[in-house]
Image (cartoon, rainbow, N blue to C red; front, side, top):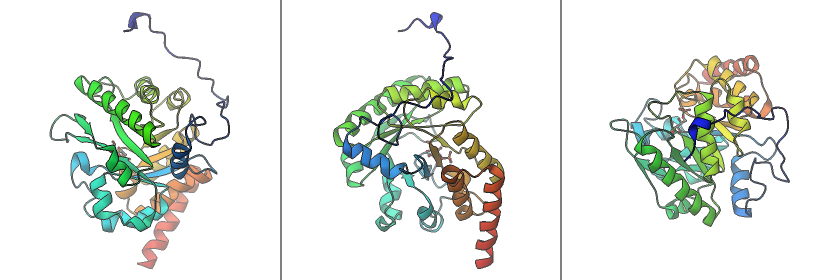
Length: 296
Ligand code: R5P
């Protein structure tokens, strides 16, 4: 391709100017088909345009990590506070009662684990995603990561083709290539490539300059929480991401590894949907934690 010598850094992000959107609350989906819009509306609250996804798919690359040893004990009680559940089909079928009746963003690729080189993945059969009544399919994209870049780009585009056929949106999950800096330039590139290749949602990471990532991505961006942080820092992270243009979170460890996961997910929800600032959210977390411990 591409004459990278002549690459001009992006600079005109139109901050402060609303995106032109007609008649639908999810960015970039105004022209989507009915089934696609229905599924997106199950994930993104039509009143706020935002979502709190609870991510607990970590086991597909790292096994029974802390907080995910017993899904029935640790995750099922959190589901009522999430807008959407993000997990693998194995955990969905074995451990999530269908009666929780929450939209599912199904981890739809699988492959190598933390024991080898990550992201050498294949796609699951879309018919199985349909059987699971998936509201979205999550697929990794690992930009700049050697052979894995092409493998994951092929998975993403194939998932988008099949998703378009059946009306199921794809969430592009930006992995971090080994040699890549975790900065706004990298995540903006990875996020934009996901959207250009057909993703209807992008999951990426918060970093300095995040507003450029959100502004230059034509579909909603949600942030992963990353490694466990002290609760006040995790709530601050959510607040800053929302303030800088994220349409929600897809958060795992900072919820299920929290001292009080039920309190934490409600505090995150309040930041995302009710506009609580970090101090208010911390207070809510402490109050709920206290109430829950008193009730024990
Ligand atoms: C990403 O691909 C993982 O599968 C997780 O879903 C993601 O990182 C979100 O979880 P956490 O908030 O723990 O980073």
